[in-house]
Image 1: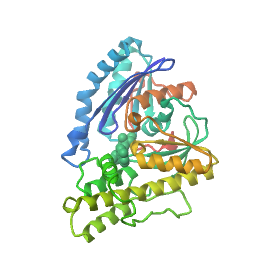
Image 2: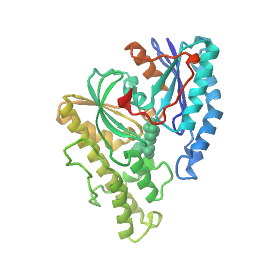
Image 3: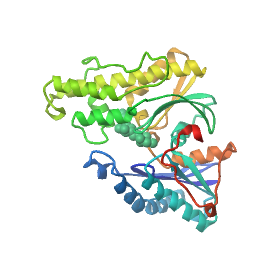
Length: 343
Ligand code: KG4
Ligand code: ZN
């Protein structure tokens, strides 16, 4: 079965073609980061307009790379939610139009389920159940995956997502949006023990987390140092970045290990953009090895939003008989707010 996957929930236009017998045939991405950078964050209307411009050319290019034609496609999968309403409408309406023209079924996919299953695209297929740490710009959740489509929320951030905290702190340090990767680079030059930032909720009984106070702690430290982000010395900026990153990574590692223990799982899967963070990867590798567990990460390219995870999630759902297929005659809907527990 050949599946076209379309992703447009935020600021990345992702298109991919996945063959259930041959694997990923093509996977293309257009990132809007440069466009949003001058505003310091994603501008929803600009995001939607850009998805409209990019989707059709990317689909053409993807078909060419996969050596396929539209008539070879068996299924059109698209991100139904959660995400920005206008942005979601672009891929979902295009998917519906294509399905109508080709007389092929549609498969709506939950964006976070795409992230959750993406580590399996790397080759190794972990057995259920496993614990998943989902860390992106919009979400920070720890879930127990019992099977495809069966996810139990164990804990989540009560305020900012980890990626959001990275981005906001990076902005305090004068780094351009989205500052997560740049902050991680800067942190390599700093001392993670220079500032004793709090480890919010690390000792709470539950598996919830909080990151907004951490960003405030960095802001207060900047004030103490007597400068705004761009006026700090290079050493102070690097030390702030390293100390902030160490705090986030310690909390994420501690909560993930506790979740593995409580859920009686020896496998941890990490998904979402912050999963690209090297220190987080190292810390989780080290942590799980102390409990005789293992941790799997998606290939770096698949950590952030992409179309491959959407096509792949549709394939997994079909193979586990858990897919809801629609005809274009049913119309289409988007779900900008869609808790994973409501799958
Ligand atoms: O999953 P994703 O591409 O988009 C969402 O669905 O949110 O995640 C993007 C987030 C951004 O906040 C970005 O700063 C963060 O992931 N990120 C990182 C790194 N690479 C991406 N944060 C820390 N370290 C990184 N290396
Ligand atoms: Zn995402």
